[in-house]
Image (tube, rainbow, N blue to C red):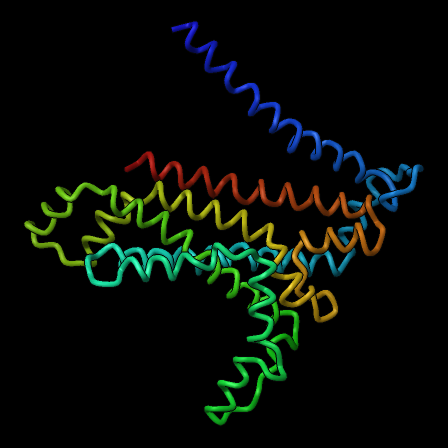
Length: 289
């Protein structure tokens, strides 16, 4: 038994080295750079202590991008999980064409976020956009979908939710198919209706799937980047930025590598502080059932 444990530990060493090299080292280096004033390519750096972090507190672009990031994270997670579960319940039943619907819902995941943003840009643009053409057919006035930062952020949230809806569907579909039929059959013999069957049997037994889907979508939404670049470019006037896109602009466009690193550290701890208690709560619910 000891030899088996030791062999298992040895097999974990390559994975641990990869984690240290690609995650721990960049994180430590990013924290270190955040204490300097640096343009990202100069050989000299100026140590300024916590000045970059103090600047965060008075930077309106940072707070706006933080609010957008929270919207992208929580908004996308809510939409993806609610509609992903509903679609999973639908395609879990037997009917002709269910495999086609599964493939149709899952297909957008196969397209990169940047390409998806490029495609949807031609749907939401003011002149010649598909959405405004449809409104014109219905005799409605065209809408400037990206006129304000909030409106652009809502469009981005909807696009991201739709693209990764299939991931939630697959996770919940796997969970539904792992529920033993004897529980459902016993409940039906006792006379429970469809709603009672879902809330009393299926939903509790889906807690492990809910945990996986919620945490995956939440972290993915907080790190949203590609679709923003191609769909809105962070506009208008950087009002639809996420923290990830803000970091890229600060580092490469504004040449504020130290400040960009401070924003990156803030993003890391924000994701950790939010996702850790949510994950802990959901895991506790899994253990209850």
